Image: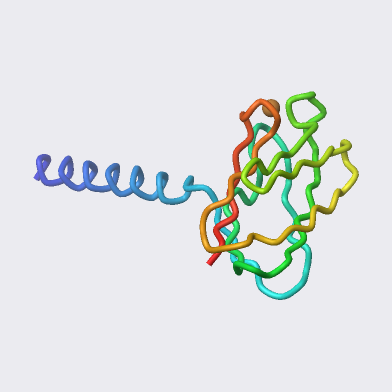
Length: 120
Ligand SMILES: [Cu+2]
């Protein structure tokens, strides 16, 4: 009987670990329509950090920087040759068009913040 309970507890723990990893996976967002996509910049993460978009269509990303540290003051799209300054607490729109299907990373200037556009 005791062994049975321990097995059950073990399974519960494994379940919780799987759930935790599943929940902590970077949030992905599918962009639909022409609404700006709001991205929060705080605590070292962009939220959402992965955004699915359509290749060849312009999209607007609205960055809202809540992190006052200089680390977060720029967002750079290296593969698109673009960057923008992000004032604290002032939503900043960045409009761009991913030219073809693929993954387009965006980062802060120190590459500590990481995000990606997934163009399909
Ligand atoms: Cu940084």
